[in-house]
Length: 112
Image (cartoon, rainbow, N blue to C red; front, top):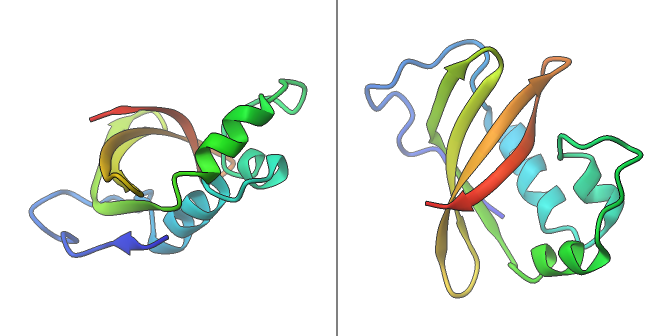
């Protein structure tokens, strides 16, 4: 799981709350970890909410989730979007992030 930061400073306003490479790497690793604990560590989900084991396995099967932190766009109020490329075959996703306790968490994904 790599983080593509080639577009940093590419004309986008980067606030102090922008997604950094370390957190992007944590999100990538958690999503593809193949463990419920790894996934929960990066998801905006209540601890009481069950996760489908098949979903955990399917996300691990992606193989990689390469987040382009240069695509980070704040939508305000602790919400942002970023794009990512998944494994094989490659597909582009749009990730919706939410800020909780000073940390970005994955809230939603959809094909870009």
